[in-house]
Length: 113
Picture (cartoon, rainbow, N blue to C red):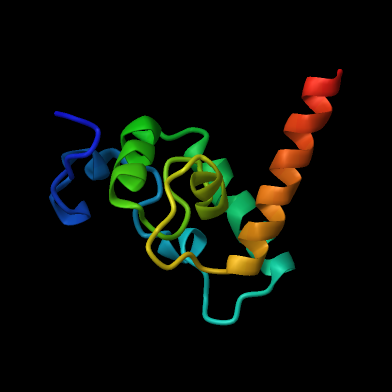
C-alpha cells in the first residue's frame, strides 16, 4: 500500500479493539472553546495513555494518512501539522503558526551548536 492510499475509516480498524483509549474520547478531542492550559492538561493525560498503548504506531499512521484532527498515536494535531500532515482545516491556526516558529527556532539553534 502506498503512503498516499487511505486506510478504511476509523470504524473499520481492527487495531482499535486493542487501544487503551477506548471510551476516553474527551481526552483526545478538544471541547469547543478550549483554552491553552486546558489543552495542555488534556493532551498530557492523552499522552500518558498513548505511551502504554500497544497500537500506538497503527493509530499514528492512520491519523497521518487521513489528516485527522485531535490527538492520535501519541501525537498532537500540532505535531502532525509540523511533520507535514495538516488537516484541511487545522484547529487553532495561530497556535500552529507559533508552534512552527518554535520548531524553526529549535532547528536553527540545533544547527548552530
